[in-house]
Image (cartoon, rainbow over all chains, first blue to last red; front, top):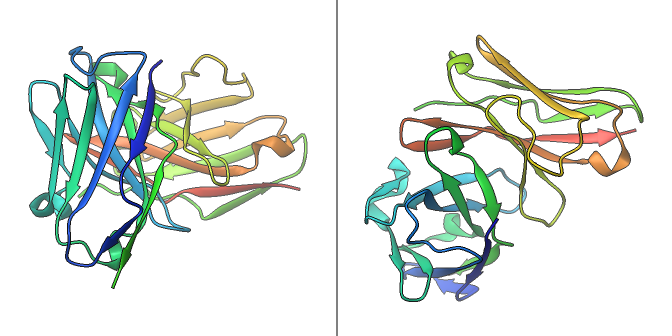
Amino acid sequence: QVQLQESGPGLVKSSQTLSLTCAVSGGSISIGSNYWNWIRQPAGKGLEWIGRMYIDGNTDYKLSLKSRITISGDTSKNQFSLKLNSVTAADTAVYYCARSGLGWKRYFDDWGQGILVTVSP
Amino acid sequence: SYELAQPLSVSVALGQTATITCGGTNIGIKNVHWYQQMAGQAPVLVIYNDNNRPSGIPERFSGSNSGNLATLTISRAQVGDEADYYCQVWDTSTAVFGGGTKVTVL
């Protein structure tokens, strides 16, 4: 089990870029047995998977967000990041980072506590 | 894109059995995972790969998956089981969540 902790600005202006970081402890993001994911949840609504990265640099993004998202990793700091461009009020949500495995372990077994990001006009 | 359908809410009497469904086309051929989310907290995995419980999850939680329907069953429901529950699958390289079901223990 690893621990994940999100950090970043809680307030972002509309049309600007949302940038969040997920610090990982208790395990290395360099180990090739995990994917590192971002998931968000607007207030009162359900979970929405945003995308994931693998340590070799490969990424998968939700199709509807693909043009605005970048997920990348920093092995020297054992963390990974989310950048979401051209944000609008619809991007206001609690953002979670989470770990998932490979093969038959493709479930989200470790989550961060979440960080609320509000997009202001 | 693949979609998962869950009932918005399920009510269960204390000590009875709650059944939460998750519908999807041929979901029976996919691995279904279930998450419990208490108010104001991050989700917690309660069932993985259809019917497996992670360490620390009570035996009262069980799952099944066949055809077009996956099910999470909570036996001997307790007040502490009140939460939102989400099913999840992978559609090739995209994770898909159901809309979530709010479980109320009466």
